[in-house]
Length: 368
Image 1 (cartoon, helix red, strand yellow):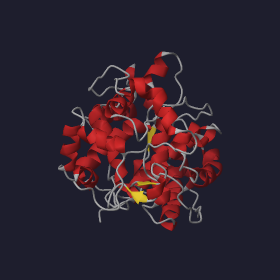
Image 2 (cartoon, rainbow, N blue to C red):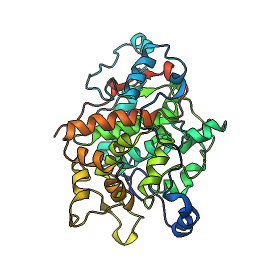
Image 3 (spheres, rainbow, N blue to C red):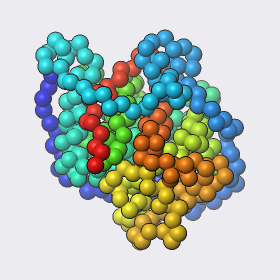
């Protein structure tokens, strides 16, 4: 086992840190962009289906124990989080026999780096957002057309172009976090797709009260850039966002569970006159109070509200789920978020039967 640490210097956050989906007004005119889409923003893009479904190769065959485990999480019959601790192998032979051995080193590197950057701070927020932005570019419609690319494949950083898109402004620190890890560990079989998702779930558990989401590795990397316009924008209607996520096999209840990641978010470019305002009164804490705070009137001073979140909280399809989470308590939201994020983190992955679970390498959850 390799015991070493990458200690990155303090990195300044430069965007919508932690806001999982957002667009930069300065790279493309949002008003022109919206005018081009107005005709269908309020029309469901895809047929609605509120049943959780299998994805990837599990749709055709569940042939391994790990495939069965992932299928259970996807269908909601198995937990998406785990608090089982792990023990790093202590000998070279034991390390070679453990597919997760190298991830103890990666976990240690990330722990040290996040701690140097305020723990649940702007770097961790970017890592959480990067996990969404790499994975959520998968589209069932594109797959049906034969363009079965994208999703959690590492192309956010490997393509050379995705990171420069308006959707991804604010993720500029991700190459500084993940490229050194990729260079250091790729000779051990570690891929960028796995690094992006692992850094995201590691960041969540780094936040106080954040869940320890189950981490799977073994994804295939791709340098092919994902298609444009598969991520939601902060001005989208609820109908548009709900149907957009249906196209990713994410039902409306799970969409609302995922939106709670804004509990730790800040905005810098949606409204530049209020740059740096958090979307929650406690952006350093992963808490379910985000749902209740958004419903408060008047809104808390110094807290910014995304138009899209307000729309989702009031829409007839999603308002019930929003209120349930607002009153449901921390454990209920953590469980719901974890289950939904496992699905997100595996979109576009077609070898689910052959992944390895390395959750045990993550830090234990912080409870206070």
